[in-house]
Amino acid sequence: MLRYIDHTKMGKGLHGWLESHFHFSFAEYYNPNNIQFGVLRVLNDDIVQPGKGFAAHPHKDMEIISYVVEGELSHKDSMGNMHALTRGSVQYMSAGTGVIHSEMNNGRDPLRFFQMWILPEKKGRHPEYGDYRFAWGERVGRWLPIATRHDTGNDAPIKINADANVYVTYLNAGESIKFEVEENRQAYMALIEGDAKVEYVDMVARDALEIVGQDVHISTEKGAHIYMIEMARDVPYSEGN
Image: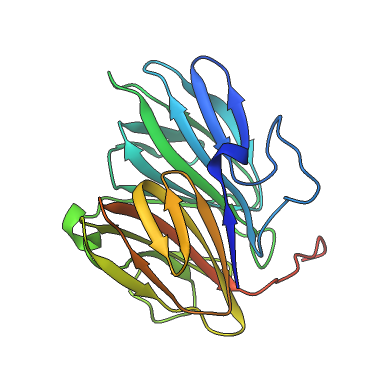
């Protein structure tokens, strides 16, 4: 089953220094019918102007992954980490029992990045941080695994505390690729840049697609930069975990 999500109908936040596109209910956007997809609770597509950003703020009991699309993301947190990441780099934070961090654009150009929150299998873990600077070519024409469930043999460098796997790919004009989703699994695809045709669905930049229990063939005419989150199907999240 495929469910197309038109980016023009997503929630938005426009604040001058910040332009946000919300895939799920977040901040000023609230839709009771669009809270999460499986364990995927948040996927925000943010554009931050130079010299601006998110001042120090807390997180708790959430698996957080940030993917830089353009510009430079500067991170600082209460665990002592302070790093700057550029296009194609990934940052991971398991908030666990609690962490405070800031995300700033200290560069000269606008910063665009995707931030994803995944609900953990268990609360109260010790906080962790990591960042990874992948060579761009590692994702060209193939699925690059950037995060995976902690107890799998997948070679993704980030191990998360949830039954989910995160991939990116970049297809050049005229290329195609397949993504496999088992019957009891589902995936959420976000088209970061370019155009794509997924089976019978035509997509443009910022569109999204829910994929449930089926494999998909993806092709592009002009090129496509794709973010894919694969997970267990409709896993409930218990506040008692």
